[in-house]
Structures are given as structure tokens and as C-alpha cells.
Amino acid sequence: MTPTESQPLEGAAVFNQFASDNYAGICPEAMQAMQEANQGFVPSYGDDHWTERACHCIRELFESDCQIFFVFNGTAANSLALASLCRSYHSVICGDMAHIETDECGAPEFFSNGTKILHVPGILGKLDLVEVEQAITRRADIHYPKPRVLSLSQATELGTVYSPEEITAASGLAHRYGLRVHMDGARFVNAVASLDVTPAEISWKAGVDVLCLGGAKNGMAVGEAVLFFNRELADEFEYRCKQAGQLASKMRFMSAPWIGMLESGAWLRNARLANARARQLERDLSQIDGIRIMHPCQANSVFVEMSEVAAAALRQAGWRFYSFIGSGGARFMCSWLTSEEDLSQLAGAVRLACGGR
Ligand SMILES: *Cc1c(COP(=O)(O)O)cnc(C)c1O
Image 1: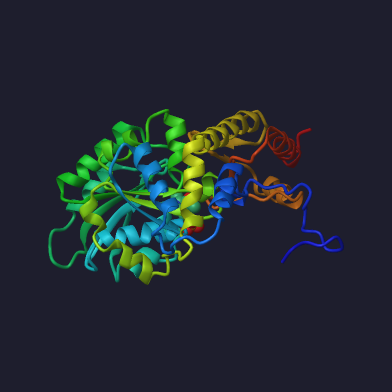
Image 2: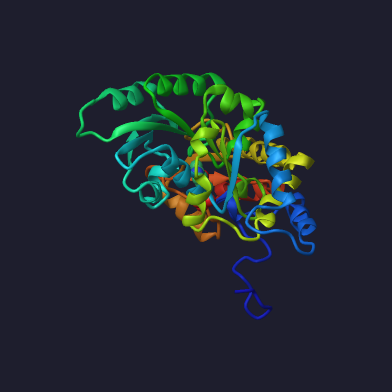
């Protein structure tokens, strides 16, 4: 529904939100690339020069001749990638906060026909390798779903990031036991920006076999790319995409934005800006009485503890944010579109909600 003069959207002029980075629109570079691709007739289903060029850009960026597929969203990317790594009697080990466990409505299990997710306690959103090894070695009998994949989220659901060494250690452990390594990279670009490393250093060079690379939260309209660094694992993946309703007929509009983002450098600029805004917000909020920062801010989110009363007052004032980690925990998420003005307005509102002035 589009807003009309007589019926404006709630807070249409200033929409006060730090709910998610996917509340932000399409960045100019992605939009322009989509517009450029909107010319005349072009072959469908990915058999076009835009898609070929997008794959080329991604391969250059990752310094790898990886196999690439474009799907509509992260849930599909993760689920289909995991399904391709597993058989139905296998299991996937991940942290207990992992998106694949908590936020995909069972899609990984659904698309893999029964592969079980085994979630283990993490530390600040990251895998605890002691727990992982226990989950892998707990049982070796036929009654236990055989561990086949270790899945990491980079950046994590709690806004922390794994260093290259941490990823190498996790994948080393996984590979020692014959597991493959999947990375949920919905915010991979934020991790690259935060660590100041190359994409290769925190993916295939650190032992990642399959990466689900996020586009939407980075500024694209829609779409994630699935990168198979080990091409054998991509066998028949195109059939999975088609069967799951994830093969875009007008593929050029999913692939061209990647060209715009990568060739212009917007992917990194956007991620750096979102991260910088979150750091600034962390500094601003940490100075308010009644606010405690919960996790180190290493990507584009800030998690704080505040009283229920303060959180309710903030919502009452029209602010949108998620609170799903413990009682009183609130997540404020920054994006490529978050302005300094947005930050100071939020900080002011939080101060008020906490009873300060
Ligand atoms: C947003 C997100 C996804 C993708 O979610 P979709 O809504 O399916 O695109 C995947 N993993 C993590 C960690 C996310 O934050």
C-alpha cells in the first residue's frame, strides 16, 4: 500500500528506527546498476552477460575461481547450501544464536529432507570450539545424526566478528573430523570492513567451503550470492535453486546490482559507514545513566541493557528496535543509510527514556 496525503505512513517524514539494516532502501550504486540492466531483451534464467560479469566481479574480489549462484534471500542461500552439503541423516553444528537455528523457520531441515541442526552454546555469538568438538565426538553410533557441517555466522548475530585465526581454527577442527565449513555471511561485508582484511582471508583462505554472501543488508534491493570455493560441492546446485523457487527468470536484475556494488566499491564504503555509525552509537549510549553495553560492537549493531520501563518509553516515543536477547536487552542496528542525525536523535531519546535530560 502506498501512503497518500490523507493517510500518511506512521512517521513517514522521520521514521525512527534502528530495527534492522534491511529497513534501509536501495543504495544509489545498486539502483543505478539495476537501471542500466533495464534495456531491451536479454536472455533469462542467468544466461546473460550481466550475470556473467557479476560472477567475474565476485571472483576477482575473492581471488578465487569459485562457483556462484544468486538467490533471493539469506534463508534460501543458507538452506540450499546446507542441503547440498548434507544427506538427510547428517547434522549441522552451529551456535545457539545462529540464524539457521533461530530465524529460518526450519528451512535448513526442510530443504535437506531431515538433516538435523545441532546447536551448541557459544561465547558472544561465536562458536566455542570445545563445545563443537564435544558435539562432533559425543557419539559415533548409528543412532546419532552424523555431523557433516560446521556453520559459522560472520559477522555473528550478536555483532561480533571472528578473526581470520579463529575461522582457521574452527575450520581446521571441522576438517579434521571430515566436516565441511559453511559460513552465513549475511553481514560478511561488515566483518571485512571491521577486520580490515581481504574477503579471501576470512573465507576460503581460512578454510570456508561455502559462503552465503549477503547483498540486501549491504544496500541491494534483494539477493544473496552462494559461493562454492570447492566446486565439487556445487554439483547440481542449480536444480536445488530451481526446485526451491529460487531461480530468477529475469536474473539480470538480481545479478547486475552486484556489479554496481563491487565495481564502485560501494560494498565496502557502505559496510564501513554502517560499522562506524554503530561505534559512534556505542560511545554515545555508553555515556547514558541506565545503559549498559552488552557485547563489544565489532560490526554494525549495538546491544544494550536497559530497564523494561525505559525500553517501553522508547517504543512509546515511536522508536523501533528488536529486543530478543534476555530481559531488557535491545539491539540497535545501523545501515549504510544511518546518518549522524539519526544517531543523535536516538541517543537523545534513550537519555530521555532513561529519565535523564
Ligand atoms: C538477515 C540474516 C540472514 C538472511 O535473512 P533473510 O531474511 O532470509 O534474507 C541470514 N543470516 C543472518 C545472520 C542474518 O542476520
